[in-house]
Length: 110
Image (cartoon, rainbow, N blue to C red):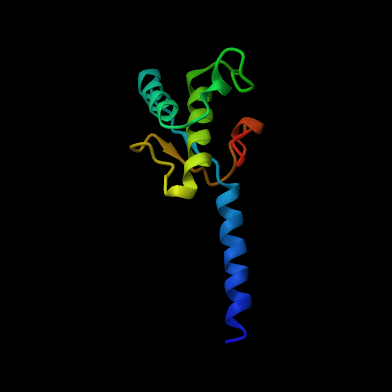
């Protein structure tokens, strides 16, 4: 029994760390499809002030970048309540951080 408690604590720390490190990004798709994902994420709790023209994550000014920021913001805010990074198959948690990852795609959601 004494060994179970340290193992449980270690498992909890590792699992929690992996969740904190996860970012959510949009899969490649055409612009109208990405815009629908942005609209859903922004309407469902993502901090989309980040991708407005004066926002900290507006640049690069591409639909794909804005989609990445929107879904990641939604995921960081809602994952603890059971939300997933799926968006009807339009988003994914990459196995390694995106090459263009910035603070806008941090696990803290900026």
